[in-house]
Image 1 (cartoon, one colour):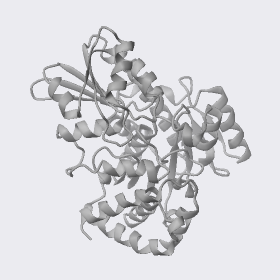
Image 2: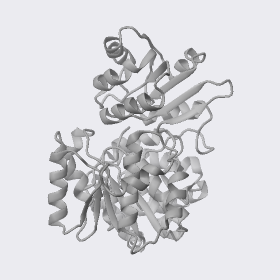
Image 3: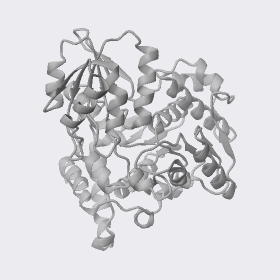
Image 4: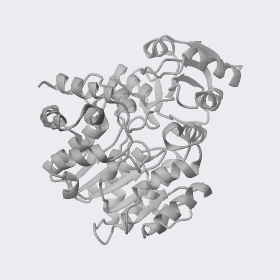
Length: 433
């Protein structure tokens, strides 16, 4: 099997659809020798901020001398971004080897119970982290939590960043219902930390934590963890990142008796954290600036608006926007369009892309003074906006990944494997962005 064949094999797993539940993952883990029982985890769920919080936790523990595993999704360009050790993406030869091993196990499953893409890569990641003898794995959920394939682990701590509206088709139409799914990662007697501030969601999390005898820590701007986090110059801009940092600091403090971290290591980790595609400012050789931010749901769009007002108040923005049709794209367009003087509506590289023409109509209604154009591709939008000094790219991490690829900003040296994100959204109980 070549690397291209391994990626194509994973892509074909989209045929098996989305399956909520842990039966397949537990069976795969058993066939693999139960690697999840040989590792220590911090399990992170929530609507927004999961990836950033994971990146912060990983950076601190790596600076504390631990060998860290990091499992996140989706990837921006390369599949290998999902599985990292000490922030080094998994090598192609290891992907091939582990996919070959996974392929051999799939014969143990009937067609109507065939594992999905996400279930397969969860076990692939676990095996890799065991092989690399990781001291601690920062383990991000895909979608939800209770029935997410990542939920076969018993972590040192469970973290729930926040509860907002997203994936209602799968998680429920109320914050309480969504919270119940996210809080499904809470385990008996395992501490749980959350920055959730929605009362109905927090009530559910509190009740589940109490039932599981899980010590619950609520992190907000008044929490003692917020002070040290706010004093550290975090490279990730936005007030929401300060709260994510406080949540990471509180988690580290909670685990201090088991994993020691000095103040110096904490500062070094947070001060050097990197997480591409989230308020990432890029300056091109000719001086053109691009700000890349996924902002893939209403809460993300709102956070982006606040960050722009704080960090770029005088900027005359050009907006390149593309959103998936299963998001609340009309309201997201209503938030993003008033930020710009020129707007280019583009298709997202997904069969579920919202129609650019319909998105453009929403943008014109929300900002009648803006010049709004429909583009056939992202490349066309980049070309048309090439002379504009400040361009914001937002609406989906799929879109951000494509722009990074087109501009040569990919965090890895591979060609695009964005199609795996599409299979992930359909076939793995994972999130779509």
